[in-house]
Length: 246
Ligand code: SF4
Image (cartoon, rainbow, N blue to C red):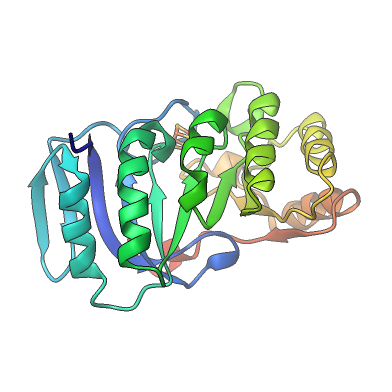
């Protein structure tokens, strides 16, 4: 039987975060998340309709089948895209769906890379679909932004799973002026426990709450602290918001 998933939206835009900033992507945003980060501003509740933004906005009844998603993606693929981004929520809550969809997608669109945006906690689920994932953008969840301890063990197993499968992975963490010293130490220790050089992206928090925003000086100082222990640490803000893009 065909698998289905509750999908919030499907659209084409540029990647606005991390080292692939500016690459044209098809975004598939899945509903549901296994975490509840304090400063989360991503809508991930299940929706009755999936919003599709192609030539004109369209609504489709949820849940969406893998076959239907392939049809929708075929319409988007008339424009050239660098990759297809599976985002959320947490897309790894939909591994049964993705296990059915990804092999078909890879066969039909061999030139479009598959890009997974994840909170880096569901390592067993990652293992089920990793074969058909090309790039992993993994969020590191800091206590200063989630108000719960960093899920270090899960993050470690997640990175191990990606590296074992020889996949490209980079880490991204949202930083505010509340980052604890202890968190810097824990993250550096986690990254240095791997032989591979792993990129760490510091993404300044974008919030209406001015009290947690970093000043330019604080941001540079924070990067310096990480660079004392790690090889590749880059400050990259969210670009799509400046450009008023989806
Ligand atoms: S992991 Fe992402 S989507 Fe889930 S609650 Fe945290 S910020 Fe929101």
